Image (tube, rainbow, N blue to C red; front, side, top):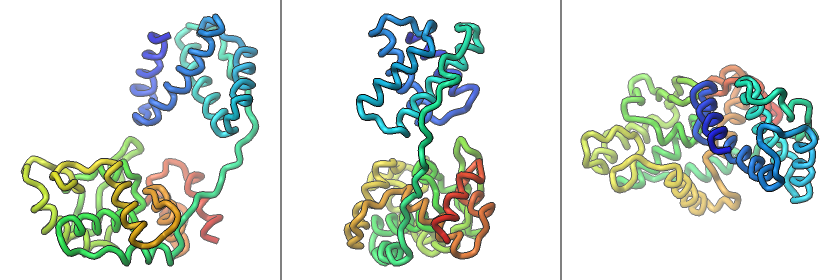
Length: 278
């Protein structure tokens, strides 16, 4: 089992160029299925369609949501698709199995008033608060994913052109930062130089130890400013990303422009925001 999972992991990384989070998700789903088959005495390469149907019934009985079961099936289907291509099994036992269609929920977004409440808390009075101003402002004007945000280097920022170069497994793009240029400039030219002791540190956003900020660090800062602003619901990096998309559409940008800003591969991923913006 573990040898097959290792093969699958390499396939996801090397051939599909999946992110680490995606690889972990696929492996977790397939491993749970494999363990279930092992407990039943079923060889992983001899699984039948009925075995998969029974597994889905078990998931339903355990109260798993339709979205979760659909994800499990997608992971297992891809695993057997790869095993079939290697000649390890004659057919994909998941190929013709479909679960109930999952209705995609509209994402939650901050209203303009809530966004203003959040931004009104940004006051630069020391190194930490200047760093926080730049961080929150970057998220509120760019809609960057939290992984993209913490991966930024100082060299990715062009203050003269008011852009930031964003790199991820989904590609590379330039994003306008003119809306927060004042805060970002003040942080880079003043606060960051005092926070960072190591001249070799390239990270744009650093913690109080002068090291690259983590995803958890970003969440913690957002929580602090959410409390200061008196906003009741939890503000996450992805909530801000959704909010930026809707606000850009309301300002008159077309779907293609918003797609480029957010770095979506497919326009259909951006299209859902049009329902909210209207």
